[in-house]
Image (cartoon, rainbow, N blue to C red; front, side, top):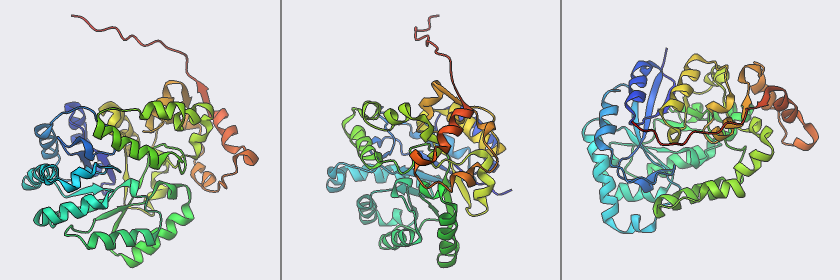
Length: 357
């Protein structure tokens, strides 16, 4: 069996122990570059330098390919104009590359890629430049264009391409796009993102990505408040059935996609090792009989209030949802289905009292 999962690496010892037990299923690992908070596309306000812990974890998993996440949508311009900041990033990347613990970087900002290529051509020549999920590569033309721009740097071309989440809900377009990539870019592996759980073609996404970048630069986060009062949390809280339109891939549907793609990416690194262990186990088993919301990254907060019974979804649900025309007011399918498989969870009051010896 070929390893098919791309998963995050965290420094939690129990999580790394878990990864060593499932390593035959893991194709590649992605990790936040220690000491470089502003590079991440997830909010990380702690100033923690975890070089030794990350390197130790990567060393215990020699087989999977390893990618550092430099995938923020927004950086302060000073990072690109003041060489002191970029020198720190280069030193960090060099440390991992010298130990044989780095195959490439995942990026979104092409300014950053050009800067790294210019300032560290030797390092760039040893690393793949892999476009991140937020590049939203949803067609062959877009994939080909990004590869052309990467080819104008010193970086190696990516060994794989992550297709945009929107294609998960359009199987015909997904198959067409993959067919062109296979024909015109032979040898390129193709990946899809399974469990993000954001709104379908989320109208808040581009702004949200920028606000995450601002939060990491400023050290102050207002994204949850914005989403709760104005954004996706507000909308899903009022109309939770919309989660069925989210372009997630259930564990039960993995084989359908593996007929077309090479690897499946799983996300959720900010939710911790327990969450990821549950998710990875479900996708390895190709089955999950619990709350569907417990598998989704962006919509995981809903699991506290609602139980969506994944086992009640039909085996052909992916084919049914791929026929959606987006006219929810006329159709009503998702609303009816959601009501039939969902119940509200009982209200609980968390015990937040500090533990004492």
